[in-house]
Image (cartoon, rainbow, N blue to C red; front, side, top):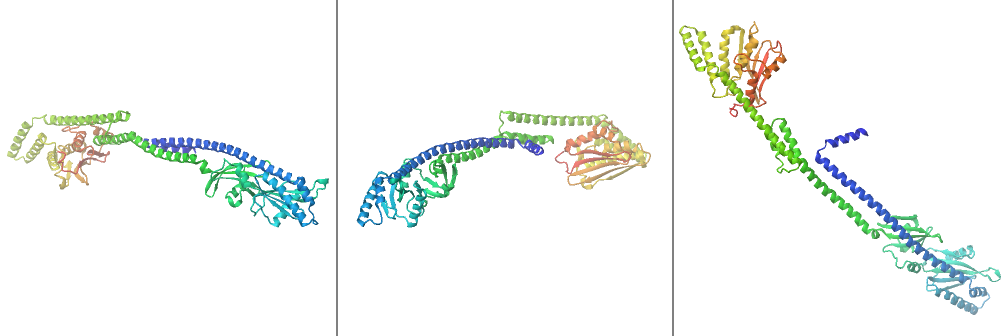
Length: 589
């Protein structure tokens, strides 16, 4: 885990500044939204609790009202079965009564029952079944039930032993009823006189209780165990929700709609009351707020991200240009470095703008100093070269050599004549200051005349070979480049040896460069001596033109990628390689 964290930390540290700023802004937005979102969720939960508390209070009040009305109807049923007249009528009925007597008793019984019905607005119908199965029906709506249902109700009433029984028959056109067994209490005989059934208008009862608090698209339900008491099963899609509802409140999807369900239990009946409230209605504003919050956050995230990237780019783009410019400075290309730094058109007065301006001034000053230093070095080398040439009066020497040459020819001394002619050629080329660059052919002619003189001195000991490609003789080279190298080879390779020493000049070509190699088979050099030679710390002989001088003149003429390299080892001889561009020199002259 620690390694993973360290790896992530390293990846973050290696990111560009603009990406770091983007991550910072993104995480700030996400954390802020998380706090707001969870805060709102807590507030919504608290709102749900408050809604449940209020709804349960309303539900409790409604259920108490319903139960009070039902208790009142229970008391009405008790008053009916204990009514002395009804007791007397039922006790007077027997199988021996005449039809007139039965009619008279029926009329009196129904009048008495009707007096009770007229006093109660929630009684739908009163059915009284005497001991002989005779039925008496009164009320706003006379209801008929099957014989099987009638027998079941009578059986339930008998089993209750005079207590009130609440009945919810299925497959009937009524929703709720109460029943009692009627017994004769005169002389405490408790003989069965019949059964009383009161059908209750639950729609009217519940409607009056809930008047003023009707739920739009919602519903009030009463359930008992596995039965739905109110409303009728065919009138509500919430039966399953009512029968499976748990305690408290919940949000449930019914028919592809969300509903807020509040559930309480009755303290009197084995009933459960349920308020089904349309969630979308009561939470409409909250849902709008939630949706707007998410949309606003997404829009803000993209807006802040866009602005953050632009802000980061305004900061990092100048820095990236500076870094690119520094890469060109590292390789010495100040022109490209200045172009990269100038890619940002506007310079501000902030820290980055100040850094850009200072960088511009710095590379300009460095470029000027380098150019000035190159100019000074070139001037110094040319001055030294001219001073070397001016050490001897060239015209005096040239005239003297001409006189010696004619004298030698007059006396038949051909060797002296050739030496004098070669020396004269060397002098003419050394005092010519018209061009700093000459063709390779002219440089080789200088070498040939120099070798001619040295041949008379060293004879067979000097084994010189020249193999230069004829295709490159027209290309340019700094004047007095090869001759000083041949002179050094004679001094450092030939002179210390007794045996003949081979000295060669040959060329190597590729697509972009020309290599002229001056090689000797002498004793070679130690690496430390080569380093001193490259630094110009070794005092040269002959004309005094050292390797560092030749290397500097080539670099000044063609560029830093060209110049002189040395390959040498003790007893392995020495190679001095001159690298020139594969160009005729027109751009450099």
